[in-house]
Image (cartoon, rainbow, N blue to C red; front, side):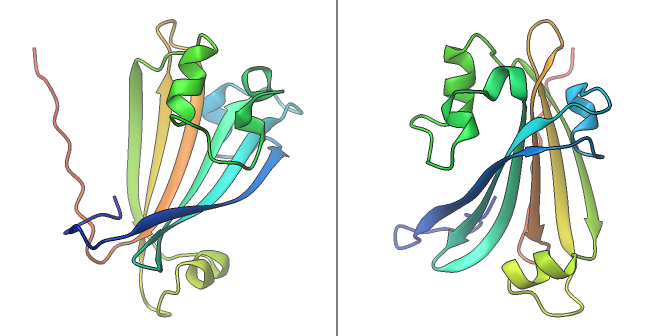
Length: 155
């Protein structure tokens, strides 16, 4: 999403911050987490040409993530979807909710936003073939310059 209008000279990198256990909240509820249970959360900032362009928090059921790269802070070779597939959790369906809103103070600082600048928040729930939730991603990005495209097969 950050690579809007990118070119060969565009440099994109990701900085991983944390991996931690997270309690039940509005984002972890779709993972079917019971009250009092925790999930593994990974946080990162994506940069484009040296500028922060996206905050991404990814959440996984602790039963899936425990003892794997999903519970670490290093970049996962091949990405989280590949690791999930290796672990037997292939995402086959995703549901996304997108909303425009004003950023929190933390988001404003991390994305270097002006005080009146809104963000887009995209929440993606990934489900396996048995409709079990395997991942929730929360992506927050400046609304300026963003274009979301969805292609949906009908019938």
